[in-house]
Length: 504
Image (cartoon, rainbow, N blue to C red; front, top):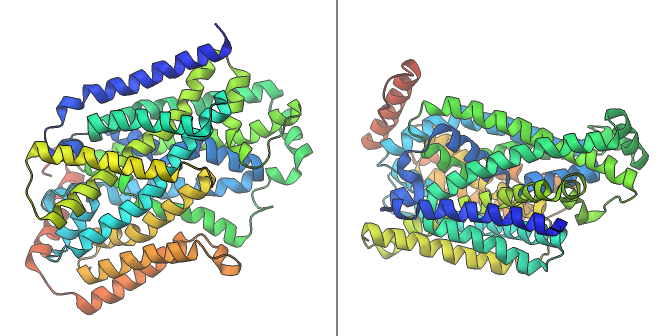
């Protein structure tokens, strides 16, 4: 067999495995709650790896190693910010959100939770949140499809659009059929593949270049400052990179993993598993970029520009047997597809549960709701594929914009809804919209202070306006207060009696 035949065989096995998981869960979705949230029965390891895999996307194996390859260690500040943000999210949001969303009328989406939590009778808050999810997730899903096209072009010389459609088609098929459970269990498999690949590639590369000393020497030949944490990063740059961690509090595709846990106590084990996975993964990605630079320098093939985002692919194909390299390549697809599938489910839920059903004002049968959910997945996929038809942005740029949008729009709102009794509907709405608008405006302005990552001003403006407007408009509502108190009671019981059966 030729080298390419081995690689195609590995990819075929991977694709069939993902489709098989989707087929398995096809008949297990009998209601919208199961299709969108898995009936709140997600095992802890699956939730933890699913949250990590859906979070990192192709950025972890393509964007981050590429950034480190081009700029050196100063590009690693993003990874540090993300790791801190992920830990804080698991610690302070996961257990409380899991309990509160069930106490508050069994909310199955972030917009429905905000609407139920604040007793928004106008439903404007829910619709606005759903529209924000649709807008930013379309960019996010599009970035995944772009990554799929880049992958097949770099690995097999396949035309960009053919590769993009292949990745999109397989992902949509298993997500369309199996829903949230299929997305989560494929994420678990994909997260495991990403973990192994990000351990294997830098170790093999380090051996190939001759060890740490030779790697460092080769990097210094290219640019000595690539091994400095501060050489190319100013104060604004470091703050912007660390600020990526703020985004975690507002990412719907991560937050729904918390909501799907079997109970609030499982967030502790989930945090340990998820952060352990993440530490190894981001360190592996950073080392892949650095070792990759040393390896290509020794080979006389230093990559430039957007080509740097293919360094993981280049290393995998040059250092491993074609069959192993094929599974390494599949790990990249795993990173891409895990994020696309998770985002499609959340976007579909916003389209159907938070916009469609609210606007139409109709009650649908369980089967009808599942069919609407699937129609939503298909519709969002088509729009995102249209946007990705022409590759005109780097993967990191597309992800950065969407990440900032969600972090600024939902992050402060989620934190205040979980920790502050006086948050009002008007405060949440004004803050959320202001955060999203700020990201859109700030992100398209350059120079001076505008070089600061747009999530920072968006997050701060949302937080300030939400608090000020809430203080001016808050009115005591017994139902809201009762739910807040019940959530605190269940949270306290679960923390004091970790072996007791869950109450919510």
